[in-house]
Length: 145
Image 1 (cartoon, helix red, strand yellow):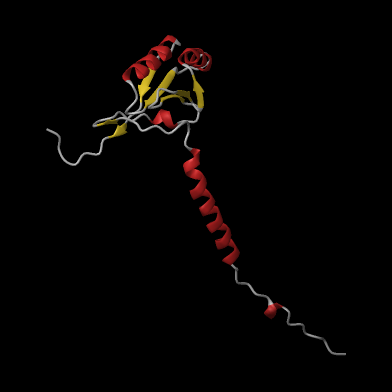
Image 2 (image 1 turned 90 degrees about the vertical axis):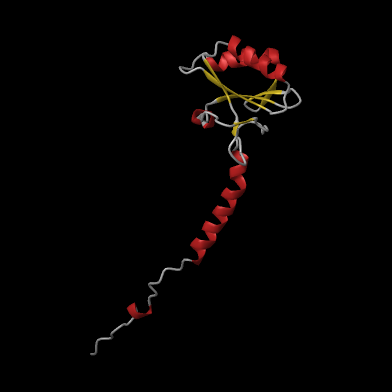
């Protein structure tokens, strides 16, 4: 009686096939590239430009309270359009249970000054401790004189 030797171990392929993983990673990369610009919070505003703006990293947080003043005078609180009368009550409701009462205002560079001042007054009358005006860094072509 002879012993049968089986040689099944030599047929096993131990190489890792990375092609499916690369395909999945490329699809995920494309999805993230498409979705990331859509994650911007609030409405898009053409901000005023300043030479030396103060960085306000807290304005990028998820729970930041942002009021936007559009060029045509429309007022948005986060993503909702509100009237100046509603703004005070909405800000007051959202700020009531917060420790830091900071509201950020981003106004269009061509918005009427009166509309921005009215928004600032309404936000201040809601009991806000600090108010931040968001601007962009001015891109200069050379030293200013």
